[in-house]
Length: 356
Image 1 (cartoon, one colour):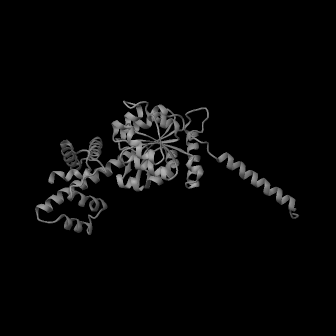
Image 2: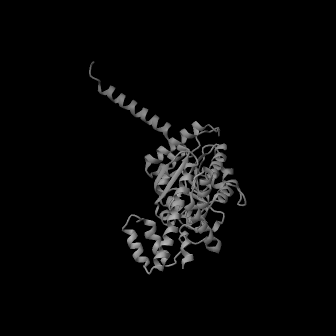
Image 3: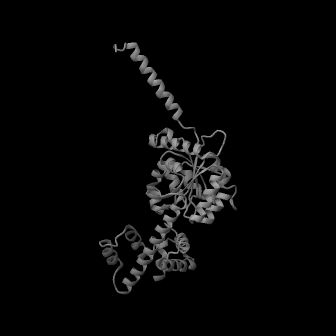
């Protein structure tokens, strides 16, 4: 064929630019996750919008478009406050709420807006995280039991609700059903890690639920943690968290008994920890908690009452599944004993307190 003229080449280039610009405009997200202007509850439509929005978050890598997403955070306790502050540091707009409003102060000082209710936060935000103490608290905040309008009142089509609380699989499933009934997307995302990892952005998120919301949240999870996994449907994350915390508390109870026996045998705790640090049982938790336990320093990073709650839920899950767990059951009783003496608000390493 004859060679193209300069005018033809220029016209072709202009057409390509126009096509690219048209595609880019159609790809750009709206300012909210909800992409259904008629407020319909089409799962395919919501999931499609969530995937598109999440892709932009990842592509921008923390740029201006990524920061347009509005984040809500319910629960400003030991874990929730530093998690929200890390999102603020990353440049996200965050609105926070807590049943005891004064606990919002650190996040507000870091630049967060304080919402008047859980419902208001969810209504104003695209994605709302919840980090609450136990199943009762998670349900109270969702349904508005004794704490003003609940989060569920703010859920509408396309809203994302991410619950980082450690609850039972049954509780997580009930919350998921309630959120989805109103057209929202739900992700359970309990974390492995305590106060220091929360401050440092080194948590591990154990997720289950809507894949579209998980993909949308990945840039946010990367800000707050070092690893995140989608383990399956709702309930998978809750079960994994219970297993992990059951093992962790059992290990700590065993360390406590080892330290007590070593002391009774005239072996110093320093020597015991040194030997273990260089052997097969070496692990970061023993290295961190051992010296603090020896000093009777039980400043809470992970409150004992929460550890005992997780043990109880793990033993309950095992009973439902017909799995014998005599060690975990015994450790649960040990933690209950310490908690019964009024030490539930101390760190879970206070399981060693009875030996001092």
